[in-house]
Image 1: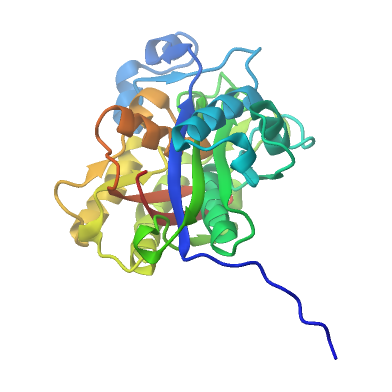
Image 2 (image 1 turned 90 degrees about the horizontal axis):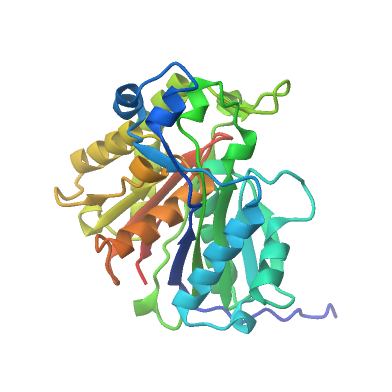
Length: 329
């Protein structure tokens, strides 16, 4: 007789337990960039909506920023390091492939022997990470997961390339995902995700310069037409309607893209008073860090309150995308 394997005990679902973020101190204005490349403050604001962004100094590494954000999220959750069973870091900007970011971050925070791994789906990475964490928790594999989105994009910039140097920035954001003890307390909906590999070359690392390259107009057209349906699918998977959503937090790629997605969702039934993240104005595009940064900043500003229903939508290089509905802790 074939032995029967034992399975871990599943739980009704997952929920967010804490938020945290970190940004470098140095603020880089549009005027500072205009002194180097052919642009102006007005040109940048009108096309991408950015007024300033944060850039890390050479001595601040991606692991440093990820550790600070993760430690703050852990403190906010009220958990101890020993209660975290897995650490996931979403990033596309580590300078070295190994060792991974997650194991280093876990060690620095004092989380002993967790499962620790990085994922790279670029700007959608945080939403991918939350989706994976929620599944791990729901299946009973672990009870608590620390999910971090962290990027030091300044390490991969050609500072003479106007199409990228005005957009990208540095930072990290994190959440703690934990078990929901009953169906009423479930706070992370199913993930709606996918990819468009036929457009992979629109955002890439230039093999000659080793710098980020982006075909901005192609990405803009794709994001403004293809991402709202993904958001709608995430809402449907959660068993909700757009009218149930209090706050929309899309990846902060470009303010015009953010506004276009919000407009499309309002035309499909989202409320007129839907609050929409606009963190890109003062943070720039921080890839996988942009959604958790925006969440933490909106909460600090009083624009996001505990118990409110939030729609997260990540999209970017790959091209990859992911969305889910969560409840603010």
